[in-house]
Image (spheres, rainbow, N blue to C red):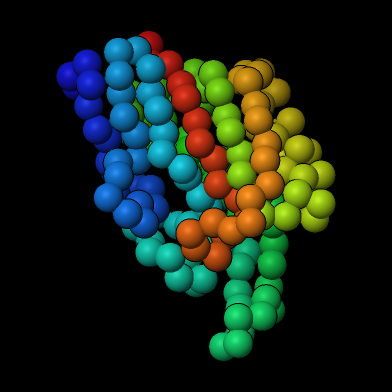
Length: 144
């Protein structure tokens, strides 16, 4: 791997635009925004764990915890495929579409997943994300 390389993997959800899953620069790894869609999926609802909508766009199933667990797993996959690991995360920026509804669940699961490693963290509410998801993570990690 070169000192400045782009990384993409079939084991993570396909990017929704022209960008890699991650980019390695020196011993740092910068992940593009990662959502909870399943590996290889596009932006359809059926590929988001815990999310189903009717033909009018109304939620008939919404499980934020399932989305949260899935986004953490997607980050883990991209880290490992890039030569890093969960414990190497140094910064996590989280985007939530509904802070009031979802922050408590996110904070509880974050504490579960990050018991040992305590990266810096920023959580912000956004009006929308580019697909029908409720959470997205932007991460920086080191590579051993």
